[in-house]
Amino acid sequence: MVKREMLRLIEEKLGYEFKLEELPSNLRAKIRKLEEERDIILKESLLYEEYKRRVIDSMQEHQRRISELYDKKIEEAQRRMPHFDTEGWFLGGSFVMLCLGIITLLLDYYLYGNPISIPKIMTTGLLWVTVVPFLVILATLLSILWKIANRVRIGKEIMNLKKEKEEALRRGVEEYNSKVLPELESDLHAQEQRVKLLQEKFERDLSQLCSEIDSTLGIVFQGRMDFGLLRSIMRSRGIVIERIECPYCGASINLPETGHVTQCPYCGRNVYVVDVFKELELSRRTNYQVKRKRNLFY
Image (cartoon, rainbow, N blue to C red):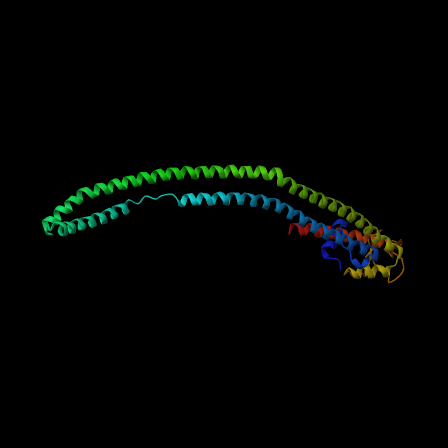
């Protein structure tokens, strides 16, 4: 079964509509063969688009692998980046100061027998209040300096990784363009040429087929010149004809049931079925072109 899209393609080439049943079997077979060629072109065109996607996807995948490798290294370096936490050092130092004060009081009581008293607690507390904060501040400053040094070191490491990533991506593009891309482009170009050749052959076959159809629709009809055949062909196209126009004087005359010639009662000239057929075909082609233009605008 011939698809409607194929018939519409032929009709656009011819410039008028026709019924498949009007054609002989050999032309119908050629239309089916031409439709198979069109299906092959569509499949090859899809394959060509697949090749194009493969080239793009291959490049993106190549770059993605390199980018993911260096992104993982950069994330690991960022996780090792030290964070400043002076509040923790202050709380920790205060806790240590409290513990050392209590331990000093207990040792003084058990080792030397000095009683624990309010003045003793105040004296010991004053001692640790003056000494321990200095130690805490010193330790905090040392920690900050150590973290700054580590942040600078890791920051330089991250910058180096980013530069290496850019360099690796650039080298990856160069390597891809020099090794992988030529092979893919070769396949792509070969497929493009194949599609182009198939399309050129299809256009030639389509033009030849349309020429055969155009001539056959007239030759077949003229070879069996009869008004009855004209009626049946028009009826198959959905057109019922009872009266025709005289091609010489323009008068409206009855269409005979049979025969190949009739006489115009107004001008007296013979009206052949061939002339009637030509006028009907011309009118049909004109109407088809008008309908096509109208569909383009609406």
